[in-house]
Image (cartoon, rainbow, N blue to C red; front, side, top):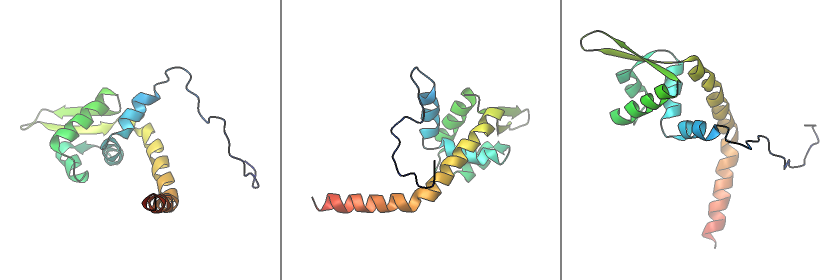
Length: 131
């Protein structure tokens, strides 16, 4: 795009004429806890209780469900060590690590656009309150 470019592009940036699987990924990334869990696992191997402490507000049940879904999708591996009590560790797979680049891009975008979005929301709310 040139420096003087001001036109709005109407061509789709991405095309998904047939089922391309994006809905599955969107469902996984769009839930409340997945991104938080993946971010914590990006730092390395974590035990269940450690993850629960690092992800404020997540219940034991939701962490269990989130980890199972991530494991089912091949994004996380679960290793059980034969100790008493059993020690369970979770780690991102190669595919899981590759997803962290997408999450970082999303975080970067949201940080860069936070003020613009906040202003748009204020303007919208103000306009709605006047009607």
